[in-house]
Length: 209
Image (cartoon, rainbow, N blue to C red; front, side, top):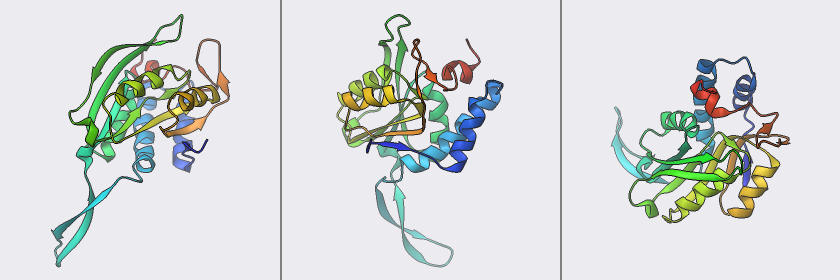
């Protein structure tokens, strides 16, 4: 489990609990997700490389440190990943964005790809893949597999919730990809939903069923 990072900051846990409530409105759920994603972004980007630049303060010249946001790519697994993406871009607005469209076949639970669009020069970039739920792991595994074809410098996976089954599947397929999550819930049910979970994240973000 050394590659699994549970972000237990009090603010992260507080907002996640509010999101879990079945009576949370679409507006409230979406707002909390954006706030939580911004908080998670701080931890996920903790080891980003810094470079020195010379600047002028109102007092004198100094050397300061900056990150190169253009070397970072947030990859959203459509459609629910969009909710996390917006919050992370609030923290790193200079990051590039990729999208991968996957839907889960309701009978087989296998991920089916329908869209794939990434920035150029991926071999120079660090990738953070975002999706609210790591449940069966099929979508995350498929997304990372496709991204690896472009040979980026590194890949991380960020989700709100996961479960032992999802973690095990992801680590078996991609043991080199660290997982960042706010909670590891108890289990999956027969329909591939996390328990206790928070329901279908995409439906709750967009107000659909």
